[in-house]
Structures are given as C-alpha cells and as structure tokens.
Length: 196
Image 1 (cartoon, rainbow, N blue to C red):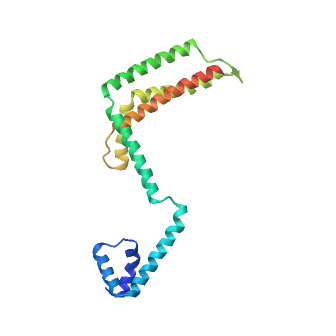
Image 2 (image 1 turned 90 degrees about the horizontal axis):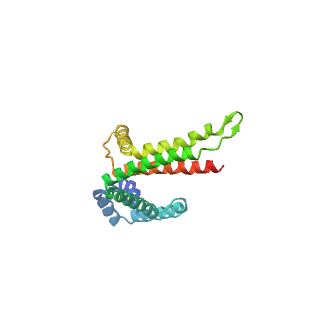
Image 3 (image 1 turned 30 degrees about the vertical axis):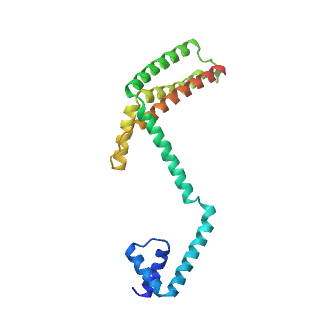
C-alpha cells in the first residue's frame, strides 16, 4: 500500500474499524513513517474532543448497557415467575375467580343499583352502565381467554414479522394480569359511581 492509501485508512484505524490484515498493513506503515503517526495522533485527539463535546447530549454507553441489562433481568425474573406457576392449579383458580367475580358483580348490581339522575331527559345509568360493564367484560374475557388471545397474538406476529415466534407463559400471564386489572378497575369505578 502506498502512503495515500494508508492515509485513507487512518480514520478507520483510529476508530478500530479495520480488520486484522488491514490493521497490520497500517501499523507497518506507521512504524516506518513518522508523518503518518502524527496524523494518527491528530485523528485520535479529534475523536477525543468530539466524544467530550457529545457526552452531555447522550448517555454513556455504560448507562445504556446498565439499563439494557436491568430490563433483561426484569424480563428474566418475570418469565421465571410465570414459568414456575402450576398451570392446572392456576387454570382452576382463574375459572373459580371469574365465577366468583361474576356472581359478586351481579349481586352488587342488583343489591346496590347505581343512582338514577335525570340530565336533559337522559338517565345517567344509561351513560354509566357501559363505563362499568365494558372494562368488567373485557377483564373477564382477558382472564378466561388469555391462552387463546396469546395464541392469536403469536400467530399475528409470525405473519407480520415473517419469522417463527413461540408463545411464552409470560405472554399468557401478562394477558391474565391485564384481565384482573380490568376487573378491579370496573369494581373501583362502580364503587365511585355509587358514592356520587
């Protein structure tokens, strides 16, 4: 390689982007030519100045790595918890919990009906019933149908991403947790509307 070709490779060498064969050629030329060593030092100094100037604008690589590792650890922990839950017992719990919640909701709905108020000829119960029944019905559907929904979600991801994605127990558990959250939200909203 002549000096001009080495000079073109110097920025890549300074950034550590050359393969071993090209790096060896550049190092051989640097050993023989002090002018190229001076240019390399100038490039390294410029890289250092640029890194210092950009440091306040973006988090350091180590910060991103720490955040990424923390997210991976949380995901691994959640997956471990989901995988250790006994499926049969959890299925029985889900069905019993749903039956209990539906029975309790029907009882509360009849025993403590929402107060009726007339606003411009419309009763407020017509407005509030969908607000309460919507999240409740969605919650029960997500809780009981989490495996079917997870299967559908996995199928859709496989079609859209054009690669094979496996359904995980964590995915099902997250859908079930979303269902329980919807049921709790509906109950809290109903209590709030009763006190109005």
